[in-house]
Each structure stands twice: as C-alpha cells, then as structure tokens.
Image (cartoon, rainbow, N blue to C red):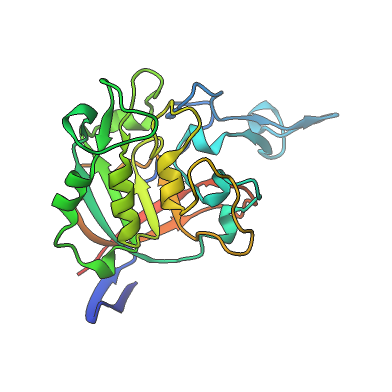
Amino acid sequence: MKIKFESGGREYVCDTSRPFFVSIPLYFNGSQPNTYNVRKASSKAYETGGFIGDTRRGGGCNFEEYRIVPHCNGTHSEGVGHISLERIPVNNILKDLLIPSTLITVSPEKAFDSNDIYIPEKSEDDLMITKVLLTEKLGDSDKSFLEGLIIRTLPNDESKKSVNYMDFLPPFFSIDAMEYISNLNVKHLLTDLPSVDRTFDDGRLTSHHIFWDVPQNSKDVGINNHSLRTITEMIYIPDEIPDGIYLTSIQIPDFNSDAAPCRVMLYEVQ
C-alpha cells in the first residue's frame, strides 16, 4: 500500500509494503545480544499433569512459557518509568503509529578527545557520541523529520545481533550530545547501543534523565505530567539501509511495564 502525507509543508509518498526491519529478532534459547550478563531469554514447554505443550514430545499443540529481561536480552523500547518511582508503563506512552524520522551514522570518538562532559567523570577507555558528531550530521536536517532520530554507530556488523556487551565497554552519549538531541525536540530516540548511558555509571543514568527531563539524582516523576518520549535500544541497521528520512514504526506488546521488547520497521520516503 502506498500512502501520501504532508510534513513541513511538503508532500511525500511512502510504500508501506516494503519495510526495512531494524530490530533484532529474539531467538529464545538461541543466539541473542546480552548486557550485564543476565540470563538469556528462554522458553520451555508448559507442563502440568499429563499435558505437555510440545508437539515434538507428543503434545497436541505448542504451548510455551517465556522468560525475558527486555532491557538486556535484545531490542526494546522504554519510557520514563525506567527511572521513576512511579510505575509508568511504556504502552501508555508509545502511541505513535508512523514517526517521521532521520537516520544518521556516526563513529563514536574517544571521550578524552572531546570537550563534552559526562557524569560520572569520563575515563580513558570511554567512547562517546558527542555533540560535534551530531551537529555535523543534523545541522542541515529537515526538522519535520526529527520526531524520531535513529543513530547507527560504526563499526557496524552483524555481531551486534549476538554480542555480549560485558566483553567490552560500548559507547554512550555525552551530556552535551543528549542535551542537543533534547533541544531538537526528538520524541523517539533509537540506537544500536545497549544503553544511551555508560554501562557502569554508578546508577546515575545521566543521559536518560536529560532526555526525559528528570532532574539528575531524582526519581520523582509526575504520574499525570511526565515525558512522552521513548528510547529504543539494541537495534541493528544493516549497511545497505542508507542514511536519510523515513517513517518509523515501533511495535510493542501491550505490556504494562517500563520497557517492552519491540519490532522496528523503517519505510522509505520519497
């Protein structure tokens, strides 16, 4: 199906029958990305009495139970409930069907080569997405396609589909970079990193706080007056998908939780 729409006073066409899939399929009990060395997402046949929910074992149907840690087992979307005392579920926040978005590719730089700051203090081994990197890519961008911002990092290969992020320190966003993104009024931020913050940051989640407009060191968020922005982490964007403008669809299960696994699709715009 082709749709026509207007954005920023211009008319565009999009073919919704040809999506690019940029979320990582979750293979329960199989190869999957992981951070913080949590248990892998797993599934097993439900059994009770004489019932076995596995056709391979003589059951009449497949009937499984699943175990997952959405923040650590693969592609997921999260809302401000991730850092709040109040339980604010992401399914009450993520309601946009098609999001005008911009995809950029950046090569994170050594933290000590940048004047950008971070809390806690930067270390010699840190790699950061900095404000300079973002302004170079977004300085002339179409603001009407910045409701969503999709960031692919280099190097970029299929190992992102199964990497253990405890084997090395992944890049993260500097304070300056996240303030820049926030000031662009980006509503949905998507990244192939496991977190917008440093893996070990003393539990501060500095960049999360900035994006969701929550004071640092605070977990108090108004239950009826809070950010409607989302962060989607651990996507994978193949190299053949070019930088540019897209419509983005983020699909999540109707989980009443701070984060949920998700399926992300990009649609080319002409």
